[in-house]
Image (cartoon, rainbow, N blue to C red; front, side, top):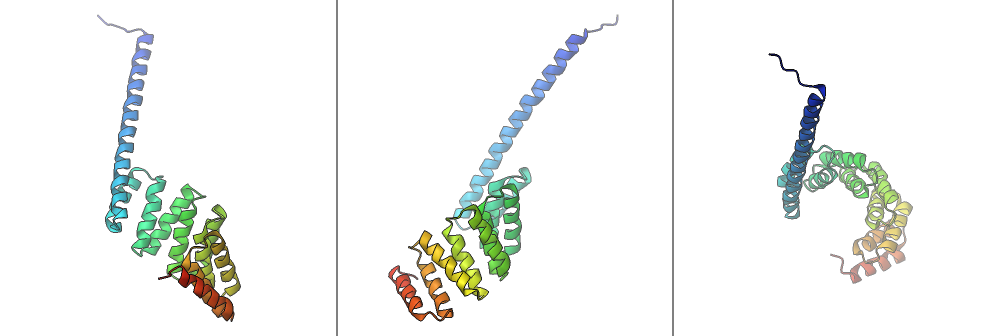
Length: 204
């Protein structure tokens, strides 16, 4: 004897199957998130110990699991920078800014990477972007000042160091670097004053 189940019964089964699928999917996502967080914690521990190469392996795993993970891309950019793999650092910093266009620290890392390969014009562009995102970013002004210095654009360099010092007057390195700029501009008196200030701040 054939047994036919009413259509509403099949609808109920379908709903139950769908609900179970959603629940299982939620559990899977939660497990994935926990795994990613643990990988990030391990990577951070290694990063803080200066074991950048070891940390990279964990950042790689995070990115494989979550291609939009902002923290992993940014930290991997930093790790690559410290390992002097500037091309990789530029790539990861670029990906970071694609995910978060206002990530001023990513522009800064990319700018520093360009600076270290002596691509000063690109470095200036990135330091400028960092400053646009965070106008009170003293380091951005100081780094841009250094890039201007190497391009022999001394007035621009002096202006950036002056701004950096307005934002962070206790930074001895900026006083010293502005002194170098003043010497290059033939402003010996101002340069000597800046050197004295740098020394008073115990520049090493």
